[in-house]
Image: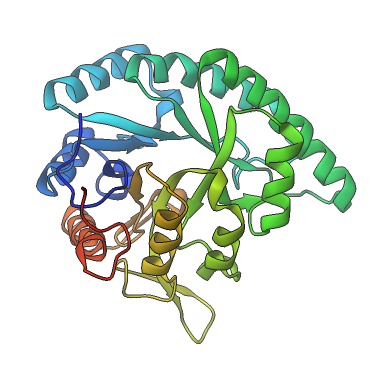
Amino acid sequence: MTDPAPHRFGPLTGIGDEAAHALPDQIAAVHRLGWRHLELRNVDGTALADLDRTAFRALVRRLSDEGIGVAAVASRVGNWSRPVTGDFDLDLRELDTLADRCAALDCRIVRIMSYPNDGLDEADWADRVLDRTARLAERAAAAGLVLAHENCAGWAADRADRALRLVHAVDNPALRLLFDTGNGVPHGYDALALLREVAPHVVHVHVKDAVRAPDGTTLYTLPGHGDAQVADCLHVLAAHGYRGALSLEPHLAIQPHADLLRHGEDAPDLFVRAGRALTGLLTTDRHPAGRPE
């Protein structure tokens, strides 16, 4: 299953719940873009790992009927809601559930983060993160999965040296990195500079763009219209031979993690506009990925 996209990256996709709550509407949004993949996080407002068996079987059937593949799964493992002092069994159980579900979905990549701190000193925080992530990677490897750590929340979120230490200390091919183009703007760091150091380890990419307002709030924009240097990030990825998916996470109308829906906005339309903006960045003559040979 391939996408008819004029570039050398992998399939164009998007996190479905950024377009709509209901699966049929998520599928409709990517169909409007001519895309054939989704990244799954929440379906009908429920996390993928929390769907009951009947709902999950219906999801698999619907995706198959619609010709939609699953590029990745965005889990809650180690994310902003699960501090490093929290119950690790929650993450182990979620990963076990997702291992079974990824097998049914023919998907290998699972997004994780690296645990926000909860009052520990730096050394203790690092030790706990490294231990937990190593154990998760062992379990993922046994299931044929690849954990992709995102530059979002946790110990290794915003520093290239920590992201590289995480990968090297765990030393397991089941742990790699996920790069989100837009996370540096709200979190206050230079994501492009981080990418230049970690690019060889990136196996999945989220695309968003944003600007920082004078009052310190973050306003999300169409890809290429903000301060996240999305085009430059794509240049760096292409130069390092990245051939994985580009997954749209625009945060324009729906931000599920913040329980935000802009009233009066048509979320699928905004998602499609963002997807077209991303396609425009990929098809411009100055993009180094160029056209396929």
